Length: 221
Image (cartoon, rainbow, N blue to C red; front, side, top):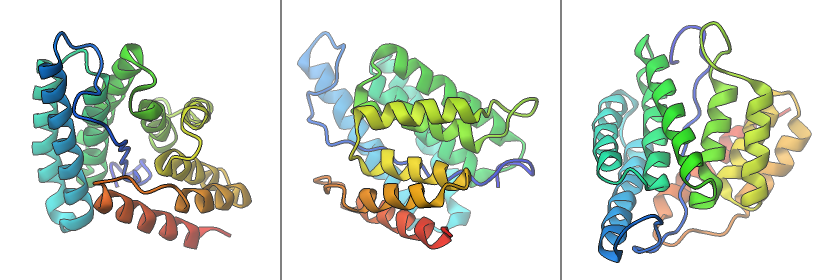
């Protein structure tokens, strides 16, 4: 748990297949390629930590990776994709670490994701919408946190409009529906998520996410 009043944050992995020169807003292709290569390393390391490390070792590893992401954001401030992953890493660190510091981490994640939406809301197939939507329904509301179910549903629906067959957009929509007691709809979303196309080079991420989906389906009524 993050804090006594927080529900467990479900792990967030929002990976799209990208080319090494696919990032936007760079003065040169060399900068774009370097930023994209750094992004790919963040994604791969995130999956390794989340799906292979023992739970007791994850918080420290995510913290270190989050520091790397912060440095990359400073180096490439116009790369929405890096802001997305800085947010993803800090939100996952919050779930792994718990305690009083978790609220600060999710607020940091929220800021990064909002920055990404300002820069390019379509980056990584709308992943900022999915991650932000997940935070809105997993974090408690006022006065402790910023949780808001209406905002959660709006952001998750927006993510689905951009990426209707994405494994992550469907997974988090299904998780949200389950939290709302709408298990029949949740099952439909999760079944679609299991049929999502594999992402080349992201075998560990896909395998871990499908395990997440099956676990969630076992909780449905």
